[in-house]
Length: 217
Image (tube, rainbow, N blue to C red; front, side, top):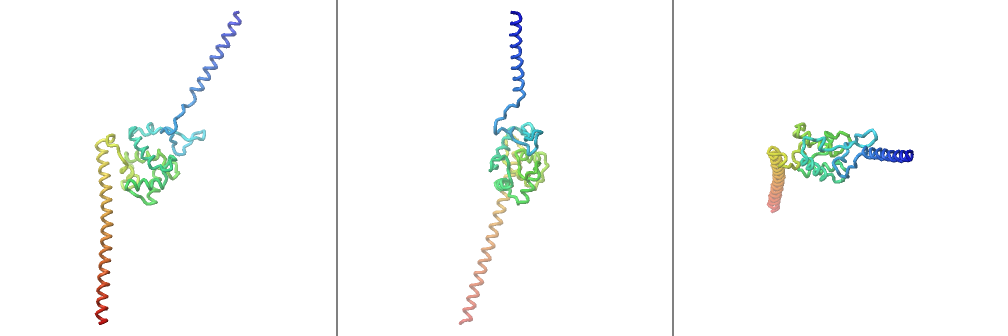
């Protein structure tokens, strides 16, 4: 009986040890990340030793921004990611800058991407999109650059940014309106000059015809 009891206890202990090992293996496996989560964003093409892409958490890496700010930046990114591939390419950036009221030349758009294109793929990932706002906050962007215009003209959550952010926001909007009005005035002046020249030409032709008629008599 003692030997049989010892054998049963041994089998039971063996089963428990096996269950413990299985539980440890399960605990060691990474927790699945839900699709669409910010943590699923890949950092450019920086691969891991296994050949995959390294994931990053915007909230962990960009601690200078609040979660609300990060959500606003992600909303802006998704708005202009027309292809829904997780990147903003040259044409999508072109549309973005036009919508913001600061259209850029082809070369200007390429320079905008180049300034934050860490993985050199000639397009903006979400992380590189966040780098624009980090550089803007740190005062690292030239005031006449396209990236500075992008950061300046993007919608800002006034309640998060406070009085200084609100002031910058409304100043930027006012400047955009002023620049638009100046452009419209230039167009109207050009059209008025063309009408004036056309009227002068018409009068000269009429005077010439009158002169011809006088000589014909």
